[in-house]
Structure formats: C-alpha cells, structure tokens
Length: 406
Image (tube, rainbow, N blue to C red):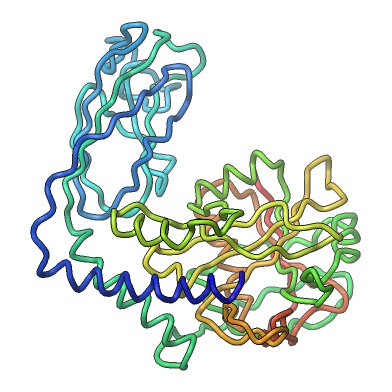
C-alpha cells in the first residue's frame, strides 16, 4: 500500500480513540431499528448480515413468507439426522460463526444473548428435501450490552500493540516453539525459534508422504514483489479443494481481504463506529510461481486492524497430491509501521518471529474441526534469518506447517 493510504489509516486509528472517549459524554444512542432478512428453506445457511458482540441481546422474530412455511417446523418430526436433532424438521435455526458445530433453535421467536464475538447465520432444520419449500421473513433487533463499554478497552489494547511494534513498549511474551521432529528429507536439524502461537498444535509425527515432500522441496522458499525483490517466506501449505479451503477459513473467521483501497479508510472508521466489523483491509500484491496471490486473508479485531492484523496470502500450487489441490501460503503478523527501505515510504512492520503466525494459522483452523491432520516439514535450504522486500528482518526455524483438511 502507498504512503498516503498508510497515513490515512493511522489517522483513522487515532480518530477511533477519540470517538471512544467522546462516547462517555455523548447523549444516549436511540435504540436501533430492526433489520430484516429473508431465509430460504432450500438453502442450508443464509448470512443474517449481523456481527455479534459480547453482552448484546438479539431479539429474533420470524413469520411465514413464500410457501407459507412455519418457522416452528412440522410438529412431531424431530430426528437424529437433522442438524438440530431435538427440533422439528423445517424449523428456523441459527448458528454463530464462532461455534459452527452447535446450531440453536430460533422458531418464531428467540432472544439470543451473545457471549462471544461472532457472526449470525440462519437456516432451516433440514437434511435433504425440506418438508416445506418457501422462505421465512425474519426481523432482528439488537440491544447493545457490554460492547459499548468495551470499546475503550479494545482501543487501549490496539494502541498497546501499536506502541509495542513501534517503540518496543510492552507486548506479549514470546513462548518457545514446541519441539517437533522434522519429517524433512534433507535431514537438517531444527532451529530454535520463538513464536506467539496462542495454543499448542496437535501435530502428527508421521513422516510426510515422499511425493508430497518432493514437490514441496521444489517449491519456492520465498515470495517476491513486483520488482523481483524477495520477501516473506513460504511457511505453510494447505491440502484440500478450493471449496474446502474457503469453508475452513470462513469457519475460523478469516476474512478475504478487499482488493481495492478505494473508500477503505472511511469504511473502516464508519463500520467500527456502527459496530460493524471491518476486517477486510486491502493488502499489497505479492508473487509466487510468477503470478499474484490467488487469495489474501486476514484476522483482527476491528479496532486493532489499523495497527495490528494477522494475515496471509495463498497460491494454488502447480502440483496436486492424491488428487487434491495444494495451496502454498505465506503468513505474517503486522504489529505497526516502519520505513520501506525500497522507496522511503511507510509500510507495515511485521513481527520478526514469523513462526508465530504460521502456528496461529494452524491453530485457528484446527479449532474448526475441519482439519484432518497437521505436520511440520523441513525442506532443503530452509529460510531461517533474512529480510523481507521492504527491508524488515525476520527469523524462523525454517519449517513448513502442512495442513490436511478433512
């Protein structure tokens, strides 16, 4: 991204801090008007376009729409084969993206108390052909809870992250990377590293398939910018179809990055103020296999997005394994800003312990239940200490995290 855009993002970040301070003395905000969504009985899940915040209460009412389908479902048809076994077939159910395996009954009316941040989806309690074809007319009314009170603390945490990245003030303690025997064919010893991985990964110690290992040995070690400057290291691999990859990442709450910077700053400020999480800030284009990334994903609290975000880029590899698509990725954690050594402009500063972001990606996916197994692999000539394309230093134990999806 260019200098002007970065400066605008900085201004936005501190503008949000000012908004939070002003909220203490501002008049009470009127109760929001209900929003509406139409939920088809023939579609598994419909996005309710509603971000969920801890402490909020969502009042949901549903009535029959086309087809005169009852949101309470067909009485006496509960079955163990349904997504929600103790509810009638065809009843309106919901799920929170933070816990996609546990749907809950909505029916014609429900007051949903939010315990953790997420995103609301609605759908019919159906397996196979629905008992009634049509749709439901749903109204959603949100009563703000502790979210508003948490705005200042969220901004304070974001500011602390920014100061830590810029000035070395505070910051999380780095934890030692778990020792895992490498299955790499090179036989090189594992290097010591520090990570900021949020939780220990459940990693297989089985040796990687020889053909997959051979293909990974021939894969590029680093991505490059448009000027052919080598940059971030390739530090993880996902094995699975595009549909499975996108589904797993969505379940882990990773968002696809916007591809255009137009109006991004204003959107970030307005969305955050209106409690709509803007988590899709554009990222720069990098190259692998002589082409730009197929997808860019990011994960962050909306109030910390300007100063700090977890993000990665993935490319479809020119080889497959056992008939499955292979995706090669490079992930880093932005923790502030620094001077771009190529042109003197401003760019994001990354956490130099890049293994932390590699393991964070694996951890978030593993929690979704959509990962079959994880394995570390140390390729020949591993990247262990170098600089990215903008001049920022980073270090690694050189291993790839190979993620096999279910």
